[in-house]
Image (cartoon, rainbow, N blue to C red; front, side, top):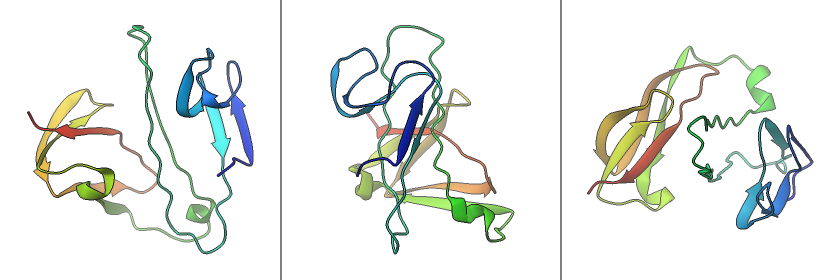
Length: 132
């Protein structure tokens, strides 16, 4: 699906290339970026993968947000439980959960992962990886 608009704080947003011109499978961008998609009527889900390319700079930080314009049109609960079926993202067996923003391991889970009592308009970023 092609974006309706895209802006990068440094360089350009590119399809199939990183900001420094390396081939990738996906969208490459750098710094503060905004990529807007207009989903066709009738769609109620959006699925994506995000990858932080390590350039050995310890200052790397990633915040990935998905905003829905309808979120501002209707009242929402104070908190929500967000549940992810691990098989739907290609994971099976025991999975290690790490909170990337807090920089600490949350624990392990199997089958599903639930972020409980997430406050309205808040995001979390977790790394889910097979347990060793």
